[in-house]
Amino acid sequence: MEGLNFVPYLGSQWFFKAFSVEISTDQVCHFNSAFHNIGFLGGGVPLTFLSSFTADIFLRGYAGWNSRRALRVLDQVFPKDAAVQPSLVIVYLGGNDSMHPHPTGLGPHVPLPEYIENMRTIAIHLKSLSVKTRVIFLSAPPVNEAKIREFTGNKFDALGRTNDACQKYSDALIELCQELDVKAVDLWNALQKRDDWLTACFTDGIHLSSEGSKIVVEEILSVLKEADWEPSLHWKSLPTEFSEDSPYDLVGSDGKTTINISKTNFHWENEWD
Figure 1 (spheres, helix red, strand yellow):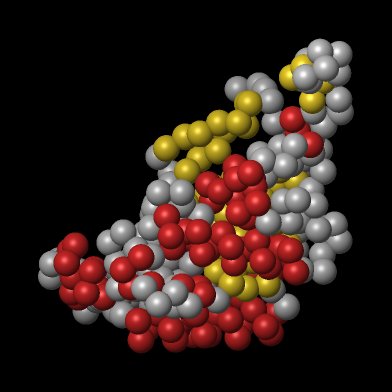
Figure 2 (figure 1 turned 30 degrees about the horizontal axis):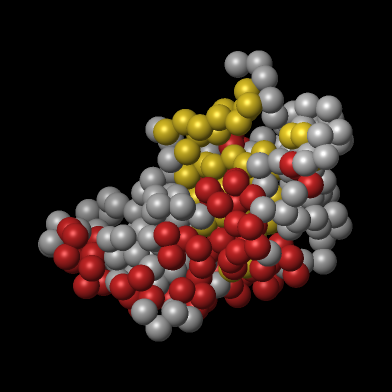
């Protein structure tokens, strides 16, 4: 629909942002297996809110996916001949890859060496999209194994997810990012900085709660703030679209001038400074 920028979320729910001008606005895409989209205030939502005047946020969260499956659609989601390429792509894949292999060969498990090569291919592809495209990888976070069993019983025992495996996949991805000069968020260690991470950070032992999602957002914003990228992609550094003063802005207390809301620092923004 003309004048609307539709944003698919988790493959089934749809949100829209009106009157987005894609040509002049930075595009940020979350490409992930959906673990940090599910909790209340999932990771992509605060970033979308903070950047609502400065960037178009595309949430590509595919529930249950692994790196092998993501690799198959990489060219479709990020075509090299697209008229507009993203300024930033945030990638999370690895939690499902790290699950135990099923005896039948079915299931989401991807052996660690293959996972690393898949992520290498994804990183190289994304970095080649344009000279302005930046990439951040999120590593596999820890899980609450007891809470997983509480929620699922023994339904997924054969496809178990353990902290031992999550740490191995997380460490390997961080090492790859250092090799490829790709920015990374070490979620394995970031979540465990909280003493109560086991109970506070998850809804079901795997997917993040609002507290867990908040940690993810803080870590991403920290990377954006500290990166020596030109231009900066931190939300406070991005130019606001259509930010000129207007007679249609709110009228000030003097009854003669208007207040440009786009230049206002709202109290809730201070939390994410």
